[in-house]
Length: 572
Image (tube, rainbow, N blue to C red):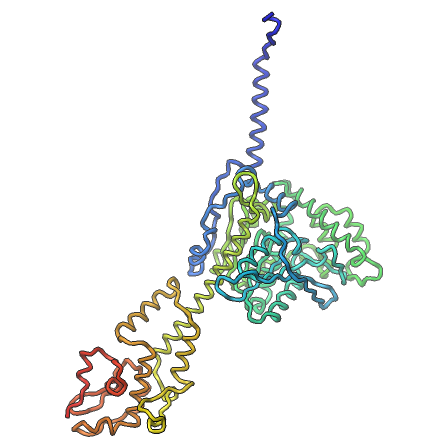
């Protein structure tokens, strides 16, 4: 009976095959998910300067580890796929207003405006002007998530809707967005500057939008007015160099190229009547045969060559890519610039990353941030499986913007402090004093005019600004040493000087009547000397009496240590 219930033993070879199959599956999973890759802080490329040191202290995300979700977060393909298909997790719905701008060629540009929901960290009016990625708009989930987070940090947000990207907005001219056209973005920025004249701008671009914002800033110096900083995330920098890598199967880049080209074809064909209709005044180089070539296109380069470049009259694809790429404009940007890419981005080849690396080695205002993981606009964070709604990218951009705003505030405080220090050390001239007789005013003190020193001092007090310990520490120590050595406040010193000048100018005879040797000589050049510097002495009873000695007697202020003030008494 027991013999009948026994099962035949499997040969050892079959067990080996099963183990080999399991090992192969595990190897593929480990390789595809990149589970062996370590987590580390992002690689930073920058020049050592005051700005870079301040950013390292003020932006903890630049020096902390970026930790993606454990199971799938280290795969750039999965990060990119999740961004492309679902955008973000539990994306909010910020409330905004849609604005319409009619361009010079008749095109209707739109952007959405979102007001801040909290006070800014430095109390200033700051607007983020945002340019999304290719064929994206303000209704995309990753844009909504970022806008909501920026609003909660006190930023007004203006998000450009790429021309032709919104399905419910018809084209009003035979043109749609291209790789590097800055017309619509420039119109949005000009609207913000005119509507909010006191606001300052933080320029943000994602993917293709990063190319547009960098090109816009580098086109003219006037475009950088009122701009605090610029942030570009996951752009490719040079379309001419990227076109070769997009046709390679390495990292499945050719497959991504096909998917993006298919999406672009759908958008173009949805505006077929506005772009290729018989009643439309099309560009001279755009022909009906280009529409048939569009149907058979399988890459972005074919679409750009047959349709997109002809919107702006370029003669060749090479000319189009050279002129529309931001690489030739990056060196003209003088505001703080942060360029962010992921090392595992399947769309941006590693050879393209030499462009921001080289730029950061030459320019002090440029910082290049390169984390190991993140994919293309992914940068999800999480513990094991499920990602968090807010990504590392969203936090970094806002944190960098906050640091730049604080940096500019500190610079302004330091410049005001230096100006105040210069005013305190500068001579006091007659133009700052009101030498009206005390008999006309009814009391015995010289007064400062409203346009004089007191008015300047009150203006400085109204600003209520405190020196930054980090940026102005040396200046503060110098000022403290100056106050300790003299033993009085600045306002008291200026009032004492005014009293001394009035006494010397108008009442010398009365002041010197107790002296046995007669009147002291008056020298008008003494009135322009610094108040802590002894001017030319006046002979009185065998003692040398400088002007500030009489200020100590007449005004009651101690302008010098008491041990020395006893020397200033006149001998009767």
